[in-house]
Amino acid sequence: MTSDQAWDLLVDARHHARWIPWTTVSTDGPPAVGGRVEARTARVLVDRMTITRLDPPDGDRAGVAVFAKRGPLLLGRALIAVRADGDESHVLWLEDVHLAGPLPRALTRAALRPVLAGTAALALRAVRRELRAGTPARA
Image 1 (cartoon, rainbow, N blue to C red):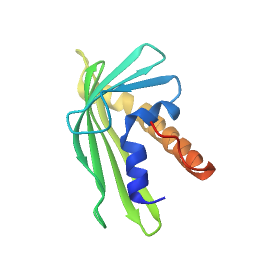
Image 2 (cartoon, rainbow, N blue to C red):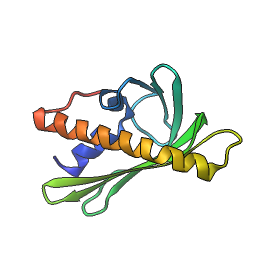
Image 3 (cartoon, rainbow, N blue to C red):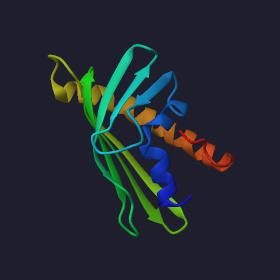
């Protein structure tokens, strides 16, 4: 899979519902700076995001997408970077997220870190399986 293909698949949040259990995703259209995304997990956790950066890969330069978390519960940002490496692509998915509310950011960030890292790892494993099985479905 080329880095362009990986990029197109990963930054389009409409695909994420296939990979993250109990989650539905709605967007205001294809990925674009200023675009809005709303993910709902277990019909309870609402995660509203705005795309603040969308720089596709270009040759040896990695593509970077940043999603600003706008609440109501989760605040911070998620970053997806895709870099070409020969015929393969390397993906970095980072979340720097804390809970809204009166608790200290550092405390809630630390509490969320393993959950969010596990969710990203689960999603990336599902992406790999999907790609090995054939062409992924389009959003």
